[in-house]
Image (cartoon, rainbow, N blue to C red):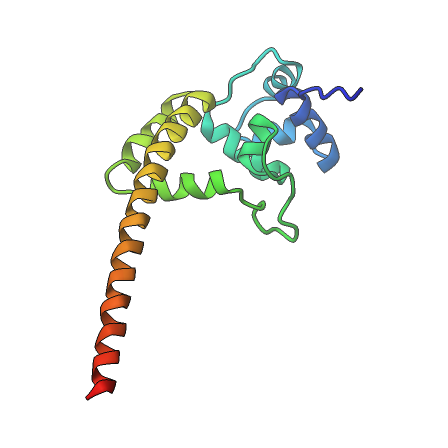
Length: 162
């Protein structure tokens, strides 16, 4: 029987920090100027909720993507040679949504003022609606594309007949 145990965020951060050879003080500074005791409390589980900005900076310092750092999901890899960590589709979607002129400012406000979990819930809700609309737009485009192609092929056939 296999037992799969989820790794707590604090334990994951401690493991990643140790693997990078960083002290708690160094990681705290790299995460936005936090103290050594803050990192200790985070690793021990006394602090369980990160602000998004701190999580982004910490993920960068540890060489992992945000999704892996906070949730243990996605890609665990450093980019190597100073390159950014390998992105996962969720991270790419966040970048697209945050640059949208209509919803981007509101998402950025949520990112700055709410917890990582609340921010992820907001992104997931917007992403679900966005994907649904994207699927519908793609279906409409495919139908129009087929119609244009059929009309074009019909015109070519008529030209050759004459």
